[in-house]
Amino acid sequence: MVNHKPNKVLINGKLVDVATGERITSLVKLSELWNADRKVIRRFLDLLESDNMISRSSSKENGTRLKVNNYADYQAFKSDKEQRSPHEQPQGSPHKQECKELKNNNVEFKYKEFFEYLNQKTGKSFKNVEGNRKVVRARLNEGYSKRDLKLVVDFKTSEWKNNPDMNKYLRPSTLFQASKFDNYLNEAKESIRRVQSTNTGQNTDSIKQHEEDNLAKAEERARRALENEQ
Image (tube, rainbow, N blue to C red):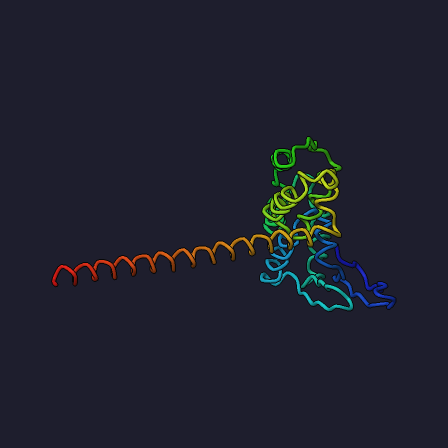
């Protein structure tokens, strides 16, 4: 993953030095490389850094620089391992296992169930095939959640399902398109906020009316009590 010897890489039109045991990358690139959610990648890097296995530094100009601490020691270990008997098997790395477990958080996304949900909402019959899974996986790798995906499906279905001109766009390639998904999600969330705000206003009016009714009833009872005394 990291350089075995000093090198230079071209970033934004400039050559940047990368030392032995280092790599310049980004969460997006690592997410694509390991097919895992960016949040998963970030937690895994945090784990390695907390164990002093790597160091990190980031900048807008050069991205994320990863450095394997004590890289020379690992290389010496590698040379020793190559000289072992073929029958000797090293123990598994706990950090590799941790990374595998973290990646599984994304791998376990149940595409079949998700497309069944999409078809139920839209009245369509999209299949659980790689062409459809690809756009969904891309959004997951960007850090969006299953709830976000369903929220867009629900919102756009309510907008487009009964619109002859827009109904055809209730499809994975449009709903989860990279250039549109974030806008769709924000529209959906804003719609929910407006509904909640309206409901809150209605509840406030209802409580106020209830209090006024109770006050009127109390005044009526008081008036009748005074009439009876007279």
